[in-house]
Length: 83
Image 1: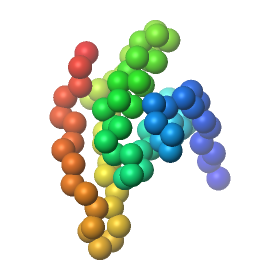
Image 2: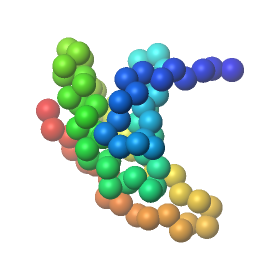
Image 3: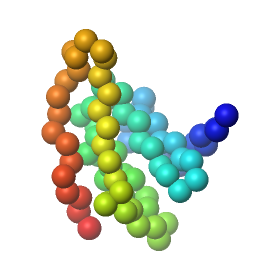
């Protein structure tokens, strides 16, 4: 079984989570915190810049998971990111 490791666990909002596996980073935001998405992404961007890292925006994806009955809230997806 693969295990995820927590890294840089400081998120802008309690309840959100950052996980890392190999060179992948996962930012998990529950539906109750969806309004914090932009602030969390900016936080990750600033952390990467401060640590001389670059995000590959071409490999950056957003996945929205809803319940099977389709009662999830629809939000706009991110098409571009600032450089």
